[in-house]
Image (cartoon, rainbow, N blue to C red; front, side):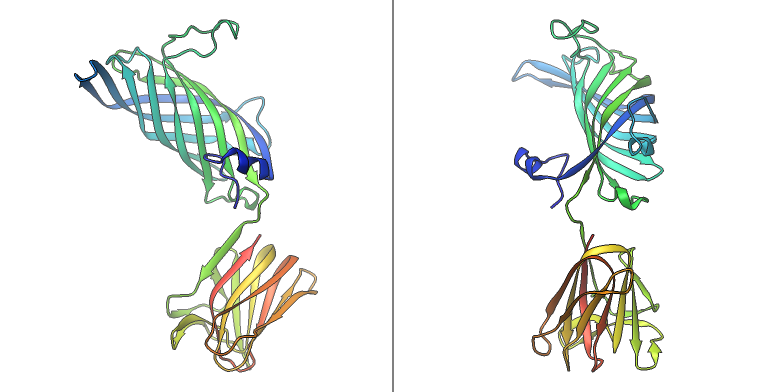
Length: 324
């Protein structure tokens, strides 16, 4: 499995093979109070102020941004940023947490942010004293999320982990108004193989070739050429894509492994993998009996196409998987 940058354990990080790219961002926007409530705990003799904020900011590159990091300029918002303040005052220390959506030109990052409010970590004696321990109007912590719906194949599965530091207008009510700050972190991309699967469990017809998984097309052929349509059918207890006499699975980019789950009802099928030059790089033939699912695994670098030959025209494919 790919390393989880948000919740990964040390032992997992030791084993992970990762690509990292710096993120360095300027942040400008605003903070809006949505709701605020006082809470009193007589049992423990304390009171707190709970404030829900709407955070909306523009994010732009700064000096330490990498080429990959610069692609993440955009807008970040959190509609549930919640802070609990000491002693019922928005001018005292607080702890906050929220979820965020970070929209960029290459996809949307979704994740979680959490940290402290109204505190000063950059204080003496360890640092140069630019802060005091009780500084107000400061919010800092860690955000972590995953890029979803990536438009760049190189960023599929990418994660972002970073530290943020915001300055805002403090008040007894919890602070609101203009906000500015910084985000410093990394884009995390895992070199672990990415495995995807599609199933064919819904009976019905579709175009030929059929597009599946966003990056794969499947063309089915009978003895006269391409069929008018592709069909998912149920025979006995098996539902799958009817592969006719021959089917061609084409990938939008090279993959390293293809797994075809097949069920034959008359004669075994053979699957053959090709690279971009049309060279055969792997082949496998079914060995089990009729109506028994079998997974054929084709492994080789640079597979771009797989052809399944079903001489008796009675083979279904319930599932197709591939590893990038």
